[in-house]
View (spheres, rainbow, N blue to C red):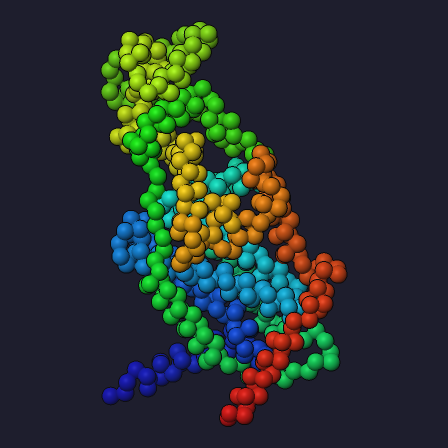
Length: 486
């Protein structure tokens, strides 16, 4: 009996696959095209496939699985290490294209598509961190929201909205990267591997070594899987409002009072635009209090009582409530009928029980955790914890990723280290318009980066640096060794 491999159907499938691969592969290239320098695009594609596989698996299994289950933690770690490899390979790929002037006519759009992919990848990584479900997600979401607000995009891009972030990270940005990647490769295949920009440098055309290409891809996969096994993705539990209220009830009460009298960071937020147009008194006090009373209607309605008072009486209530929140003992206020204090005394125990945070999340499902994260940000707990971990935008752009004051493994967003330099150089952290200015600066850098091949004089910089001959000679030497060995 003939095996399946001897059947005509098997031969037809094999021939069809070979035909398809023949149309996809680049078959002839300059001698240096078989070096590692020109395998980087394929390695980036390898990372994309791994990111898709691990990402789809995590999305299907859910957050509890990737945070707690041993296999889920490993898959999450593979995903994180693949991100590290992807960004590293893209940077090397860009450097090779830059040093060899691989963006010269007619290949300018090859560079443009590749540069857009890199910019999207950086944005994609931060949205991914926002989905992880730990402290990193919370702090990065708040910091990212400040950046997008400063860049005048806060109405459309809100990292505090988990549903929106999930859609961007899992579907919209990956599809955009995939489409642009296809355009990038189609042009690359049409033009072929870039040749030396100097006419006096001659290169041989050789056959592409696809076996070597796949071996390098396999080695990268093995390295990522090994690193993920020994160095797991870090995890610091998320901060909950219930934790804050339990550990420091005075802080909880003080923050509630600031939301009530509209003096909190959220109530006074201004960073180029103000996306937080909601009334903090209504969101953080009135609605949770009224929802609680609807389920347990006991005692007088303090919210109604406060609203029925004249303005001067309301101010007196707020002043007394401030003293109450700051007091070490509340004995002096035992007989008060202050409606503000009555509401605080209702909301703080609700917060300790976890009910308050749950009610905030239910207020406006379309904004997801916006209310919860803004309240936590107003307490100052997120910033304090990030500082204690050496994990904030001042610490080289959040490159430490919750590993404390030493850079551990896996590293954090090391690719944002220049952000720390920008913050320092332009004193953006103490500037009330710092996020706006950062958005403008980084936006201009991205525009220059993407349009680099079209900028006169600047696009001749690689020729001035004259690094490319090193890459070309390495290729020639490698081919000579291969021919000698054969």
